[in-house]
Amino acid sequence: SLTFSINIARILLLFLAIDVVLFVLEEASGICRPSDGSSKVHYLSGSSGTFFTPDYPVAYPDDATCIWIITVPARKRVKLIFEDLDFGTVFSSCKDLSNGIDFVQIRDGQDSKSKELGLYCGYYMYDSTPSDVYSTERYMWVKFYSNSQSSVHWQGGKGFKVHFEAVELCKYY
Image (cartoon, rainbow, N blue to C red; front, top):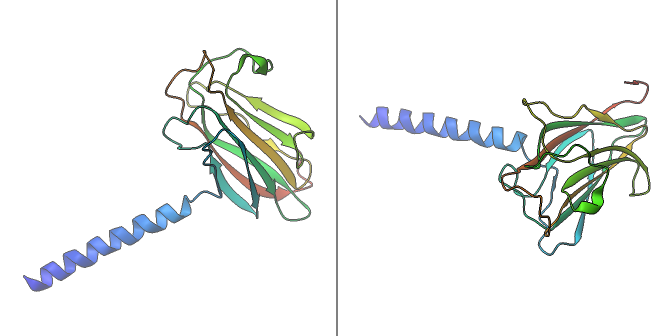
């Protein structure tokens, strides 16, 4: 009976250890926790990482702005992979940001004046996500914005989960 209890305890510890390892593998590189509506800038560097909207996969808060500046090693470029994207609304175009829609914007460089690579709002149907996005050099700028006054915001948008990785500079897609 004592041997059986010890073996059960060992099995439970093993499962707990596996859960901890799986959790660590899913750890975010840049956690955005805006509390006052101001922009929060997160600097991410390395060969890979994961980041997401505040509270993901639960609905993100209104009045949030998060900016991530990604830097990968020299002679590499950034590959951005959307694993999930859901802003809870559907729009035919994201280009008119004056109507206060929630969005994620991606730029090819280190700041808001760099060339735009992508602008996404709404959600992607049928479990699809946007195509992978590539920088031309080792930097990428990503901004998430949610509007506190948006009359078109539907509750339930969980935001996005994104993975980045360093890829060879010579690969063009």
